[in-house]
Image (cartoon, rainbow, N blue to C red; front, side):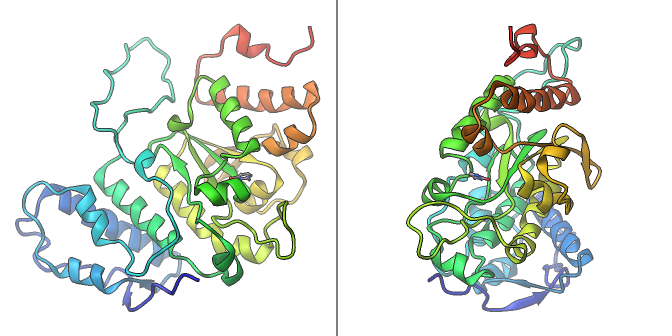
Length: 328
Ligand code: URA
């Protein structure tokens, strides 16, 4: 089992190093520091009074602030937890590409939610990396922590305008450390691509970051318990706070329940816009449901929900897209 990471605690916010803060530190470092402080203040405002911090991190923070350009990878290594953690999913998809961002589209073009190549700020990347490291080291649900192969944090673009939220990792996701890579995930990828986007344009996460354990069962999944959802949901709240998508798609009843606390049933809720902390949220069926129920009418319902999402994001919709899954 992964040993606990917590070796020392510091007061939230008060623990951030202030000495020399206004002196000659680089803009990048100041940005990272500001983002870290902002993140700690966010935690503090939600009632968190202590944060876990490894001795290496404290030692690194105590070093004089760098003056020149800093490497994100250096900062990342400063916040690596000390103890070994489960194999991690590649972060690369959440990091900015080295290639320059594409030229700005002509003014008349409809704004598109394609964000490939868009760079998240170093501060955002640092805050996201720190959040991810906390999730990877989490052992709050002991049975899940001991049965998991990987913590499945999330994948995609930190500048995504569209975010998908599912229930919890299944066996394939646990194996690979990435959400929605099994059969349901492949269908989700098809749905995303049918809108004209790719997985790298959006962000994908789950209510639970660990696979719900199924002791005594050799196959199958189980729904997360209310206790597991309550324990894990703060990670998702923070992911959404950092990404700030324009639209969230909640895949299935558990995602809706986790994000909105609504247990009305996905059949009643799907297709009707909801609001998650001011962000429009579209509930729709989970792709696993569509795999079980192959009827054209259910596929069309999900597709209509996606058309509503595309409209909300001012994405262009072709006639072909408009007519998918309609009986001829
Ligand atoms: N189902 C989910 O809800 N999430 C996954 O990541 C995979 C399957």
